[in-house]
Length: 318
Image 1 (tube, rainbow, N blue to C red):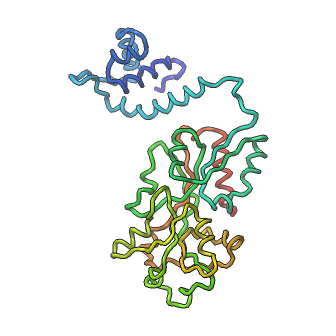
Image 2 (spheres, rainbow, N blue to C red; image 1 turned 45 degrees about the vertical axis):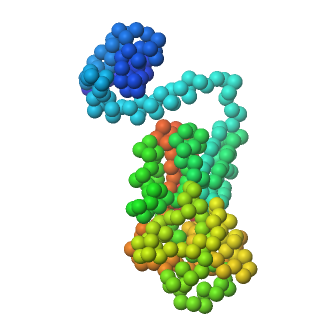
Image 3 (cartoon, one colour; image 1 turned 90 degrees about the vertical axis):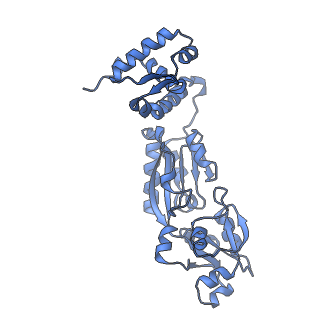
């Protein structure tokens, strides 16, 4: 039978978290400024509530049971949220709701240009901050400095950016899958040649430093056959790489998501595209799942739930 939460002294959960951290009744008592006897009584109540020993004494200290270990992550998140709530003061209440977004550019420009208007319709006088997705954006979501993130991940099994390597406390949803293309100016000499791997590697490349990494899944695939790109220029954003590729007499070209085709139609109409000259199997490994990410602690936050649904709707419509 499920026990009613109002019957549980929530202070016991704080004691439980400290016991998991300290693995010692004495050290936990010191942290709480109480006697070890008081901590032992709290542990007895916890054991009764969960119907589990929770901790077993060993020469090395208290050893947590599997049930106790399963609570560790949830208790840590609960304490963080509880601390944030307890720290609130009426004088700190903002005039408008705050939104902190980490979004890949130019993706948000192309598909979410009206998002600020949508937010202000739902939350008048909202304070909205949109930052480009960078190497520290995931940490910002984890630390509570950002509400939500939208960017591409990787599919190659050896990539460090695959979805299955995201921390367990990050929830996500793939909105669509993108297959990158090669972008080059419309009178580039490569267009007069057969478009194949030899032509692709003959010219120098404009590269993107993605989350401080100078290589990506395509480079892994090329390396498997002893090949590599000749990087002539490295930049921070796709817009920068497309700008440089579009310059007169530019012999370098760049690789960027296929959604950037909408961007070049508006801002770089002298660019054309070519598919990456790789096999269908290799193409599958460089697919980019465009992914919405948020921390589990925000899963039931009404503001964030509304924001997620709005972003999904706008992407579907675009």
